[in-house]
Length: 351
Ligand SMILES: Cc1cc2nc3c(=O)[nH]c(=O)nc-3n(C[C@H](O)[C@H](O)[C@H](O)COP(=O)(O)O)c2cc1C
Image (cartoon, rainbow, N blue to C red; front, side, top):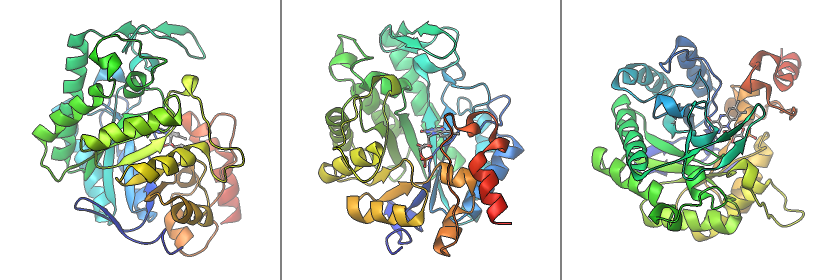
């Protein structure tokens, strides 16, 4: 596990190993403010030995929420609670970024926004997003910028823009969703690069600003193009995942050894020289090490692995059982974390 437990840095942020806990909304906040359960959760994750935690998708405005229990960073009053999470994680010698998020058409808003009037079919109903005016665009970009300033004030080591999984930035970047004919349709990355430019004006140069980007948005060629444009505009890292789930065209070669998302990360790493994170289905230390050495990505995200076993990294270092996700049709952590079958099996085997 030579590479997995080697140090890494992004700007001035020292990361003690290559293990990142990616953002995962688990849902405790009744009002967007940090609850004691949030702090407890991040304390446990930090004690589990990861080098970096990216805090769950935290909303830049209340109307852009994905769930009513989501954490928020839309007003200054929220900074104090967020600072508690940061201080708790730092005490455990772990770096922390925060993912900042707006759900766009896939959120819980009664009148959701979208780059263009996209019809989104969720399991309960069909929603049509209202096409954003230029004023809407400027206002939401400003919300991202203000959220980033609050994140800096709360003491985070950096931020991650949530730019994938079908949320607002992903809706801009995916040409099957964004049908605008203006500059935000012709060069959809403008939506993000203008946010980035605004963030640089309100935070110091050394503050890390990265993005979680769809490697397939809808194809890997698009993902690679977006990555190149963002690199040219000074992005500090790229965390490569899936794009807009309903609109993907995944084209990893048949028989590719790792997941589609890892393939996209590998392809982007070949051509874009910024730190790259890879994710999806990485549960064992051996698999994590193989991905790091064979694809040349810089960090691995271990998501459900840490939900099943918050001590994942320490256990991996000691060659212990790290647990196994049983890949339920719908991950129970979205609703009833207490019945996660992988966690039950892991705890039974490791009493
Ligand atoms: C309960 C849960 C919540 C999640 N919330 C987020 C989120 O807030 N932001 C995000 O970018 N991805 C989110 N994800 C996706 C994970 O970060 C990760 O990409 C995904 O679980 C695949 O990695 P894994 O196979 O290691 O679990 C979530 C996943 C789960 C299971």
